[in-house]
Image (cartoon, rainbow, N blue to C red; front, side):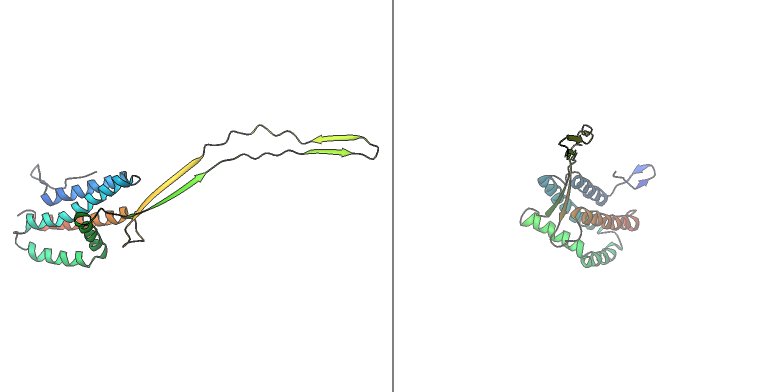
Length: 193
């Protein structure tokens, strides 16, 4: 699931920044696994937000003295600040670290399918003019097949109030992808120094 992308002369080279990104991916996977468990999901979301914010802090520490990094990173910072979803996630991280627990809204859709069997029969009593009585019954119904088991489907989705049209996991996947692009570019440009 997680890969270490840098192999240099047969030695695995992993930057500290990449290690932190792997932590982000780890907590994203835990969020996906625990999305139906409120407390576990919230804990993993808080850890995701904290780790995600730390990626660029570690990047600055790791590459800050490499020639050209400062100018490149200033441009990256401008892009990140202009990205509304990145800003919201950063704000959510600040809230969960400094103010209160993270509180996304849960949308739970429950679908229940119940199978029932309906049968009918008809009994007709015919009284003729001569007084004879005739009874006619429809064929007795076949024994009903046992009903299928009731099926219930539960779908959980979590939302930030600030991003009502996209669920938290999708937002976090998108965020992880953006961080991955930034880390990969940074390593490509400044990793060999």
